[in-house]
Image (tube, rainbow, N blue to C red):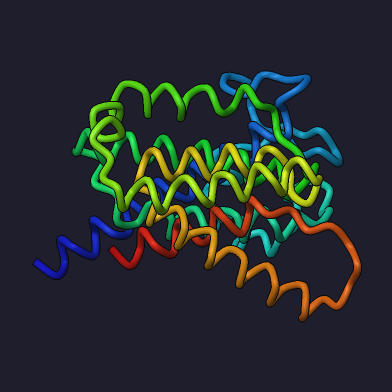
Length: 230
């Protein structure tokens, strides 16, 4: 049984790293390229990559973080994203409908987090898929929210709206909170934002730089952390 479990976890880790790798491709090609069918290439020398160059994590380590052709450095952020992606999906049961929808939600959140990290904003069209999933899979649960659920949801939502109106946070952070609260539950969303805030504050103290930090990457990491603990 332990051997089967190990194979299961490694398979999920590999799937997750592939999803994360493609999430980076979606960001890179969002505005001017084919995100699905076109082959991957080095952005420095434009050489097409072969299959051995595209194995998440393994190819980066094997090539020592450099392009096989031009020897230009491959961004370490890609390696880190693939690594995080592996752990993100390691416990997902892809044979379960509910967990498959969770995988889709997390995949979209990862893409949004990458956009927010790189550009400090993201295309709002990316919110369409997760909110459609919520509409078709969670509407009955939302209609039966208890008083406790509403007490956990409404004040935080009002607080975030206030912060958005004062331009303390972006409207995207509010949408992501609602997405997480409605798909999982308000308690999960509140815990996620608390953990994300702690991570952001710790990063700010460590960096000691007066710059704007994107919040959604921390929300993504906090979401993954909670899912791994379940």
